[in-house]
Length: 327
Image 1 (cartoon, rainbow, N blue to C red):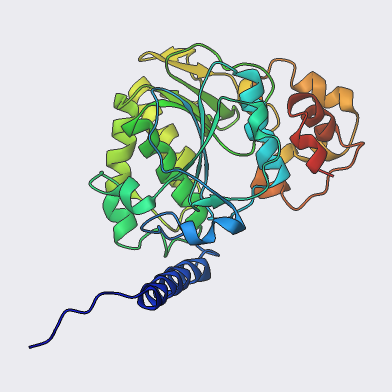
Image 2 (image 1 turned 120 degrees about the horizontal axis):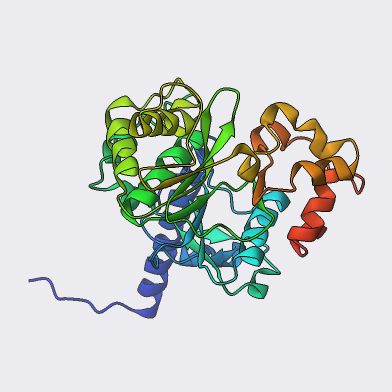
């Protein structure tokens, strides 16, 4: 008969080392594919907290502001921090959840200045589980997308509004004043084509428009079309809801406020040069009626800001802490 042997301190030490090594290998395996998409870790990596602060998993309050980073990075860019800070500055009475697809985060020296900012880890397996969009994630369709990080962001924003409701803001939207009080809103992205933008949205939980979008995405998700899963399907569903025959949007439709282009998208992506060159007064005049401005990170992330850039002056006023990290 074998006798049960009690674990010694040495045995326990070996066991702990094995667990740490296994967890580290799992983490490194995840980071190998982060150039395309983050992978969900089964639990926060407590052994790796020295490399960055741990981020608790999402347990949301009602109708918050949502912002999401979907690439799996452990650091946010100065412009992303500016977008977050400006939203917190201008909406002090609203909870802002900044969701990360990595369970750790580095270098946030100023966030304690804004008690309404809450960083949360978005465990993607858990988030998509038993939802209408779960099969797109589980089947690997997102990973084979031509733009996986962008399309993940599209699916996450609509599923957040479907499951919880609230306001969604892109991480390249700089807030200039407090958000409007409308229960539901979307904004015209480009009036010449009638496109509705997906960078700033508010809907209550399981609003019929969001339900329609989510269930259509379940069948019509397209990894080969950059815009369809975001502004494309939003524009189409709203056109159907509003029975729109042309590109002339009404101010309201089925309880949804359709905001004019200048509210969020006064500077179209075709005009981003004015953020970096020209007179500050020209940009200020363009943004006079704006609640926020979309800086089109896909088009501008590689362009350098200087102290003379009109956009830098706007950022100094609306994100006083993080603007110091922009040059």
